[in-house]
Length: 304
Ligand SMILES: *Cc1c(COP(=O)(O)O)cnc(C)c1O
Image (cartoon, rainbow, N blue to C red; front, side, top):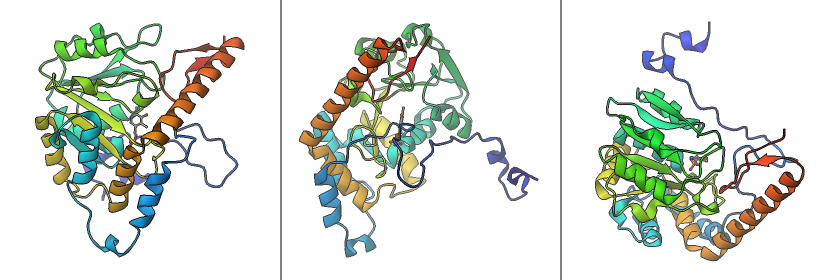
């Protein structure tokens, strides 16, 4: 008898297909590439602020609104605090977005291939999903998304291809879908793609999701955020407060805020990663590999 046959399982969870996270091997001796973590350490300022905060104040709950952190993020992007939502990693933010904004009885569209968590959320919330194939050159063609939908989710740059979508294409997608939310998952945007944040003021149907896990070297802290017009952010708040009022602990709020304030560390480490990526692309190409042009911190390559 498998565990799923247990009479104690809620019927709804029997049909779930959970995401399988990349392996986190215990012990040292590895050069770890499988989950696109940052090889550089987090901001020293972030580590120092978290150490200072590590005291008896942990007996208190954190700020459920994470106001200081949201103000910092808003300032960084020229938005209002009511246009910023924070969550326990961008995975949580995406899950809440599926629940709050993408369940309309019409299918959600996302590329085939893309981040494999999207079909998992669709399945969890009972949302039909339609996968739109990439072109022969592994690109997203926005014209292929012109079909009835209850929402669209796209990573930019896409994972695992690393290929970025120009801002003009995202604008076209937003204009063609005024009746549904377009979620742009910018987990890797700091490594070279154009952020859609500049379009937030113009498009009430745009939600941009970012994370501190990749470009800020803080995958272990679990902080992600969403940017969009206030009604979208409010929808996320309603779902969050129906589920967990305190998704970000005290240390995470303080560390994330400091990491976002440490511009020098951020610039230096992301430029180093971009330089290594370009060097590796050249070296692999010289050896006969075909590499897709990557705007991320990973490469999609094959050898004939
Ligand atoms: C890594 C990744 C995420 C999740 O990041 P967390 O903030 O660590 O949850 C989201 N989307 C894509 C495409 C990713 O690669």
